[in-house]
Length: 182
Ligand code: INI
Image 1 (cartoon, rainbow, N blue to C red):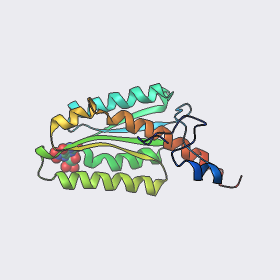
Image 2 (cartoon, rainbow, N blue to C red):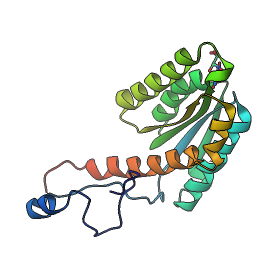
Image 3 (cartoon, rainbow, N blue to C red):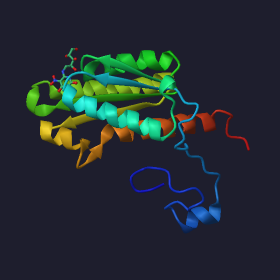
Image 4 (spheres, helix red, strand yellow):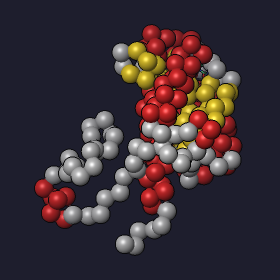
């Protein structure tokens, strides 16, 4: 596992080092290979100039990882608050993973904390209730500039990161499905 949370190169010892090598447990990680995966995206329209950049980043990453366009569906919702419900239905409809994209900007709303908190809590709950990975590609920033920097600007693209996480988690869950017996 690399410092940014992505799986390390195959065959490389993980950061845990000597103790882990001596004990040598079986390791399981989700591959960053999107072939055969159905990945759904829920994208909020609120702060659209930012969320469309997140969506572009997510779609480009899914394509790079081999997810087929016909296995990808994009559902748009009014705002971040609506993401959990859309994610629930996408998960129930058979997605292997759901990516939620939104931008909640404090400067523009006195109820930032309610919207951001409900969105984060709701997304976590949908994942736990359905067993389907639901990725949190929602920016929560003080300013519009900070959001833009994380939507294809100098701090990368949170949508692309969430898309890669979706592929990794979907493959991890597939790998665990047969059970833990060797
Ligand atoms: N929705 C967002 O996605 N981002 C925001 O910054 C935001 N602000 O500023 O209020 C926002 N509000 C709308 C909210 O998500 C719901 O769509 C709305 O309250 C209807 O339920």
